Length: 372
Image 1 (tube, rainbow, N blue to C red):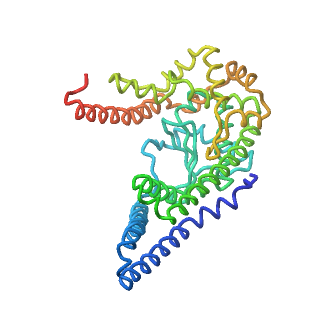
Image 2: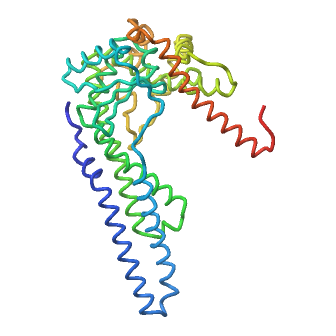
Image 3: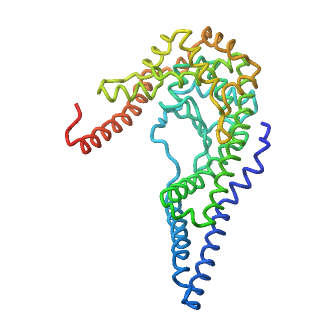
C-alpha cells in the first residue's frame, strides 16, 4: 500500500512528543531554580519573583500529574467487543482471508464483533492484528459491500496505521489531560512554555489529521479494487448518510429504548426495519446535509464529497445505485446470527440503561424528586 506523504512528519512529531515534554519540564526546573536563587540572593525583588515562581511551579505540577496518570493508564480496551468461536465465524473468516490474499494485505489474527460500529482494526499489546466488524455492517451491507469494507480496513494494517495508533495512545491521553488542565487553570496561560507546548499540540493535531485523511483515501482505493467503484460508493453512502438521520441512528434507537424502559433484544433488526422505511426524499436530504459539511484541517476522515470524487462517482448517481443495490446479505455469513444479534444488543443496551439510570439519579438529586 502506498505510504501517506505526511507519514514521515507524523512519525517524527509522534516520536518527539515525550522528549519535548521532558525538555520543557527540565526547562521549568531550571527556571524555578534560577528564580528561587534570585529571590533569596536579591530578596528585595522577592515580591515580584514569587508570583512568577508560583505560575511556573504550578505548570511543573501539572506536567508531573499528567505523567503519573499516563504511566498508570492500562492498555485500551473495548468492553463492547464480543469474541466468538472461530468455528461460528468460519465463512466470515474465509471472506476476510480471500480479500487479504487477493490484495496482498495482512490478514487479521482474530475477528471480533461489536454492536456500535461498522468496522475497525487495531493491534493489541501482543502485536496481534484484530479486525472488529459491527452488527451494523452485518445487517446493512451485502457480502460484496462487506468485502469492500474489509479491504479498506486491512489496508490500514498494511500502511502501519494501527501500529502508529497504538504508539499514539498514551500521547493522546497526555495531550488531553494537559489541555484540560490548561483550560481549567487560567493562570497557566501566563507561562510562555505552556503556549509553546500548546503550539506543539496544535501541530500534532493538524499533522495527525492530514496523515489520517491521506490513509483513508489510500484505504478507499483498496475498497475500490475489491468491490468496484459503484459498490464502494454505495457502501460509503450507506455508512455515512445513516448518521445524518436520527430516526435510524443506532445510538438514538438504543437511547430511546432505554429512556422508555422498553425491552429490546434485536436492535439491528429494528435498525434495518427503520432504514428500509426511509423514502428517497429522506436519503436526498441526508445526502445534501453530508455534502454541505465544511471540512476541518483537523478532521481524521475526508468529507464525503472528496471521497466520492476520488472514487470517480457522482453523489446523485451513487445515491440512486445505493437505493437500488441488491445482493446476498452479509448476515448470511453467520449461521448463529440470531444468537449473536441478541448478545450484541444486550451489550449495547446495558451501556444505555446504565447511562439512563445515572441521568435519572443526577436529575433526582438536582430536582429533589424522582423522575417519572
